[in-house]
Length: 200
Ligand code: ADP
Image (tube, rainbow, N blue to C red):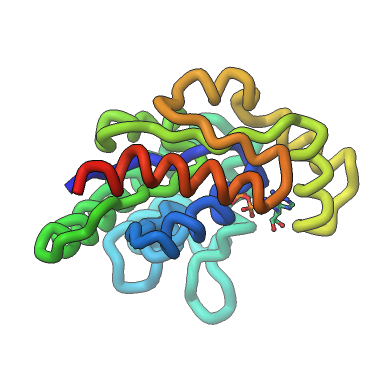
């Protein structure tokens, strides 16, 4: 079973590209989704987070308040590292469970979509990295529109990440999503033809 790590900066178009792969027959595992699942009440990481950070990071309904937790670790590198020591193995565990299920059925391609694949050191767990690239100005414009934020806020979020120009160098394949949706879809289809359909 071939596992592709799909990554790229914020609002580069990872979800958009993943949806096209899904339509072509790939199974997509979304690391963001796993990170939400991993800290749900009843999961070991939930208890570990409450023990480490206290009840102030809980919502009224007892679930983890990801925003509050984000605020706690945002300005505190040591706290962030303690949180990641809990969440990263929990996410890995969930990913392994999903992959084990998928191995039971023939799947032409598994796309593991993770914004921080390279930064989180997860690159070694996929067979290959594909990067969704977007030029900086388009990235900022799309981020502002999608999240309803100001240019200043968008610049902060983009500035906190590895520059796209650097990230793209990690990609065995690069999907340039700076153009229209149609242009992106064409690139994805070509990549699928070359990398997946040809093997059959
Ligand atoms: P990511 O998952 O990397 O954060 P998204 O797939 O959500 O990025 O894309 C960011 C935003 O840009 C979304 O609102 C999406 O609909 C839009 N978008 C993505 N690709 C294109 C494109 N080629 N043309 C126009 N808008 C796009």
